[in-house]
Image 1 (cartoon, rainbow, N blue to C red):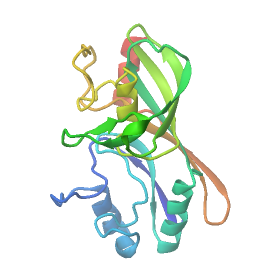
Image 2: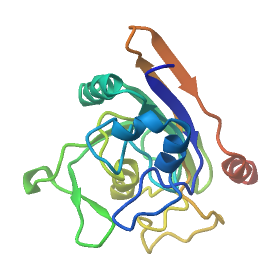
Image 3: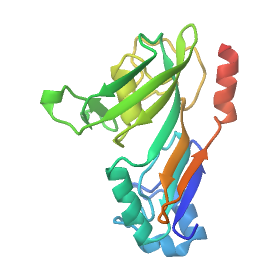
Length: 220
């Protein structure tokens, strides 16, 4: 609408440029189509972007077309009123059909990674809930809800649980013997629900990309 966009982002697309100033980003595409977004937000490198997905993660995210909507949705995220669900395929057999991971996250010493910390060692609050959708022999399909939006939250939390995301080369531990050929993490933002500026409840769903669907067919 006139205030907000919902985007189904493909894997491999960077949301916004880093200090390297990459030219091919979601932001570049938004600016080309909606030039007025240039002045929206609180960071000139991320106009209109109120939350993000990692480069190799696919699925739904929203972007703001006006400063009014940016301020509104920023508070909605802070107040945890935006509902986001993800689908992930992880290694191993789940011990419980559902659970909550409530462990702080901080930047790791290894460049580009986040570290899950014990509660008495600092870090920012991070809460991830998960439900087992289907258990395969050596893999588990999960539905995931995040209550906080920390960098790499799902990937870092599931790795700390000893169930790293399939295809996640950054976090997968050495003990995992990768049996599935996948050039991206099996993690997809499948559902986005929120109230718009008019108070109307909107819901969006995104199917798994065909590449991830083929992986599940191999396991069935």
